[in-house]
Image (cartoon, rainbow over all chains, first blue to last red; front, side, top):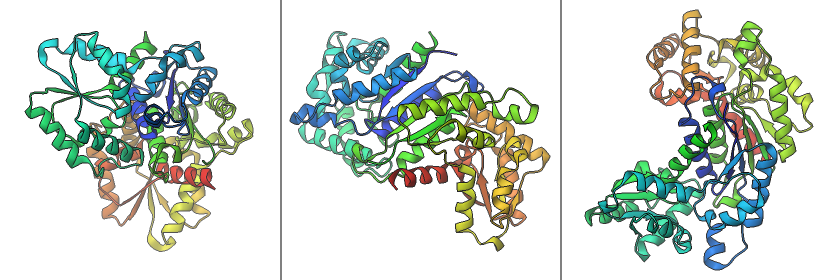
Length: 231
Length: 231
C-alpha cells in the first residue's frame, strides 16, 4: 500500500503535474490499487519565490506552511515540493509540520554524486537566478566534491524568461528554445558533459533541447518519493 | 482567483494526471498566480469500479465518499472525478458532500450535442464494458437525439484489456494499439465520423490511434471545471 505522498504544488502548476506524473510512472504497479495515494495541493496563489529572493517581496513561507499543514491534515505521511527555489525556506517549512519534507536539492546532488565521478567535469546548472543566488545547489555539490557551472548573465536572463513562459503554458512553443539550445551547445562545446534541471519548469523543455547529458531534479525527487513511500 | 477545484482521483492515476494537466493547460494564465487552486486526492485504493458493476464485487462508493469529504474539508468548492465508470454512483456521491460534483458524462454528451448535428451519424463510444452496461452514456445521448454505437464483443474485450494496460503504465507501448486501430478503422470505413473517449484511460491512447474525429470526455470535463471555477 505504501505511505501517502503529499505534493506541495502550484509553484508552478505544470511542474506540479510533471512531478505527479513522474511519481505515478515510476511506481511499480499492475493495477490501480498498486499505486500510491498522493494528495496534491496545487496552490498557485503562493507568492512568487523568485521575487521574494531577488527583490525582497512578500515571503511565500506562510502560504507554503499552510499548504504543508493542509497536506499533513489530509493524511500525507511526507511532503515533496516541486519548486527548487522554494527550497530556500525548507528549514522553516519543516518546522511547520510534523511529517518529513524531502529535499529535492540534496536528492539531486546525491544522485549525481552516485553516478558521476568527481573528475568527470562540471555540471551545468539550469536554475532560476534566484535559486543560484541562494547557493543551495553550489553548497550541495561542493560538499560532494562536484563542480557546478552556471550560465553567463545574458544566458541566465534567457533561462529565467523561458521559465516564466513555461509558467504561462508555453512548452513546445516556448519562444526561447533556440537561445537555450545555443547556450547548452556552447557549454557542450566547452567540455561540459552534464546538465541539471534545477528548476522544475526546465525538464518540461528537455525534449526540445540538445546539449550535454540531462539530469532532472524532478525525476530524482519522484524516485525518492516512491522509495520513501514503499520503504 | 477562482473557485478551488477538487479532483477525486486515482481511478486510475494516469487518468488523474491527465485531467489535472488538461485543467492547467486550459486555464488562461500568464503567471503562476493566475492559475486555479486544485486539490487532488489520488486514491488508487478505491475498490475497482468495473468489478463492482460486472461481478457485484465490493462497492467503491464508501471510499469515493470519504475522498469527496476529504476534498471538501480541504477547501474544494466543487468536485470532478476522472473516471467515467465511477459516475454510476454519482447520485449517491452527491449526497455525501455539500459541494457540487460535476458530471463528466452529461458534460460530454452536451458538448457533442452542441457541436454535431443529430443527423451527422453515430458516435463510437470507447468505454469500459462496465460503463456501457450502466447505460449512462446511452441515456445522455438518447435524450439529446444523438446516436451511439459500441464495439462488438471481441473488440470490447480488446478495449477493456487496453484500458487495464494503461492502468499498469503502458501507453505508447500499449500492446493493443494495433487491434484498437483495426477497430476504429472498421468503424470509420462503415461511416462512423466521431468517437468519444468515455473512459479516462482512452484519451492517453488517442495520440496513437487513427479513426474518426476524436472527442475526449476528460478534456471536456477539464473545460467545464475551468468554466465553473472562473464563473
